[in-house]
Amino acid sequence: MKNKKIIIIFSVIFIILVVGGYFLINYLKGINESKNNSGEIVEEYTPEEEITEEQLRQTIVSLYFPNKETKELEPEARMVDIKEMLKTPYDKLVNLLIEGPKDETKEKIIPDNTKLLKTSLEGDCVTLDFSQEFLNYNKEDEKAKENLINSLVNTLTQLNEVNSIKILINGAENEEFNEIYTLNKPTS
Image: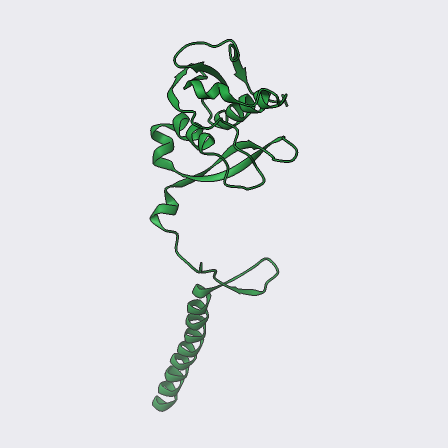
């Protein structure tokens, strides 16, 4: 009788170990795999390369340049350092417009040798003070002035605090750009 009890105890322990081992193996296997909605086993995604510190510090902005063929403004996405955008966002965006597009299908909108002298925010309006060269845009092209203004407005109003712009030349108001320009946002 004593031997039967020992055999039964060892049998129960053996069954517990086998069943427990089965569940332990499946549990460890499940750490590396997960099931998708259709029930198929999918391995966990691992990126081919890690995100660098520099990539973590960047954000995407849209700059608006005219298309060379249609002359319509089109956005061009650019990666910029978030620290620069936090320090001087208006200067950074306008200076990127001054540099011109990287896309060969778009053309530079701000005249050559134009310098941004100063920017300031009053309420929701950014005042942009340009050098005299800003007035050297192509006056023969009917859309040039409109595109120049809309390029600045569209680019700067993507910042939450900006709803309009005012343009100064060498610190003074100018006859050609003598109003506050806003983005015509559709109401929904």
